[in-house]
Amino acid sequence: MIQELIGPTATLAAAILSKIENEHSEFTREIITSAFEEAYFTLLEGMDRVDREVERRKKRPGAFVDIG
View 1 (cartoon, rainbow, N blue to C red):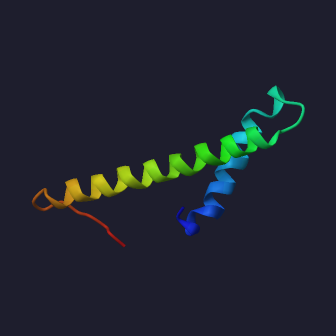
View 2: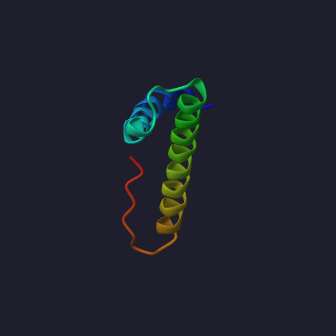
């Protein structure tokens, strides 16, 4: 697990939980861990997509790539 993603993952998990709040009278451990897992892997997938797009753009002549 990438430790730097714990904060952003928790924030995203809270957003996910707020979306399903009306469906559950209380959040079980399973619901919370599922939301955290979904958030974490969603962030990883997003980072991977960005990395692939940056690499793709680097290969194009004259393409602007801000790799910050």
